[in-house]
Image 1 (cartoon, helix red, strand yellow):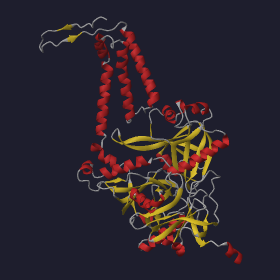
Image 2 (cartoon, rainbow, N blue to C red):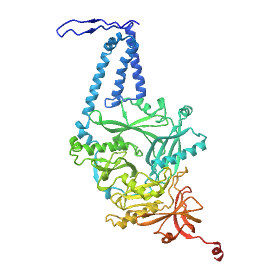
Image 3 (cartoon, rainbow, N blue to C red):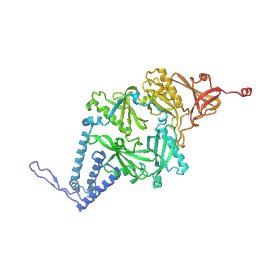
Image 4 (tube, one colour):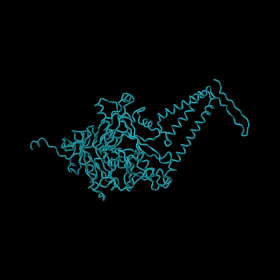
Length: 609
């Protein structure tokens, strides 16, 4: 191979005559430039199809996309000119790429300046004003709890129930192993009850290829109150589990090239028809900072038809018929917006130096139903400590109405979770992330108690937000748990407690997740009896009262009963023959609630009677 041609001219001019290099174009240079332009256009098309960036100056992804396209030109020219084999063509590549590189430099500088100017250092006031917060009184504004409208399952146990429903559906239809649960699920209000709606995914790429023509067969509804499931048939052709043109994100991008979208949420309307709710995003702080929502695009998952609505059309005076929508603002977006307000309300430097009145949200959040809407709630802590809350916020996920309940100093959600788990540590149960409820004017955490596999709810716990160290109870049924909690609060003699506002739930069934049925509440159980020899006895103290767990040699379940209900339970021992009257609950439950325990009669006693 010939040596690279290096032709230099040196001389002494006013500045010493720097060395120069002759630009040698390759043969058919025009064709090579044309091929490089074609490669750049191809990169732009493929990049747009894969990256799906909004063509919008407020989107970070737009600048990444433009940078990729501009950089592709010198790369293609370097390859097509043969500069990798003949370095003498490198100056030609540099000179020909001057204009795209200048444009790239301008884009980088513009993006960098926009990013800096959009930062909280310059835009603290704009960041702090994105979320409007209204301070309210807990007793007046927080509705007394309705135990039929709060979830008894968390996301993990709800997905476990949905998975069993999917298995039964597959066996009934013959579509075994074709579909699995996707990671997309949403807690909504449906028929005035808390539900989690769970979407499906193709089991693998082969299953997608063989089933995509018919689409996904439907979705699963999990009633988080009655703990029942229902598979709803609906031929879904557009989803986040599809590929090519039916991928939801790509379908939206081609329909709305310039709009920025948040994560689309799967919901169902009052008639049970599914929809994708895609939030339309904007930036409120400078060009690139402070995400917020200006409206939504509704996508029919069956046909792909789209309809756009502004937030004014959804929540204004002339409302569209969209009150069934529960989730527009994601919990992560709302917590970020509160943190902006909590940190920068008194300026940027105060958030760094003095930190006066600087607050942030707790590490996690949860959802609760109120007034037929889904509200996100989370505790508020001082930025200098995360050991306790100083209040909490509730945010309507459709309207973004934000209520701040201040001056409630107590346990964080994580601390309450730990307090509940200590009550059942000998059983190895885990607690769900707590829900905040109003029990007789008292702020209270409500938790479900689950087995180690996170598949079955074995009981419930309630922990007082403020006096979490002393007022914490459990119960194997919801009724028992609430009764224990009311007794504990009355014993603590809290002056604001109003027992008349507490409606004790009437159900006595042991909580558990159930297999799919017709989506109706479980029938009221009748008392049952079990006889046998005591094989094991355990006990624990709950609010000063001993609760005993008795296991018979003839069965796997434990029967729980409080010494306050039956005092002589303390005298029973392993080997005693007993007869237990209990609420049967679910046949797979590991703990059943005993109503009475008596010494079993011998054969002689029966004959004598």
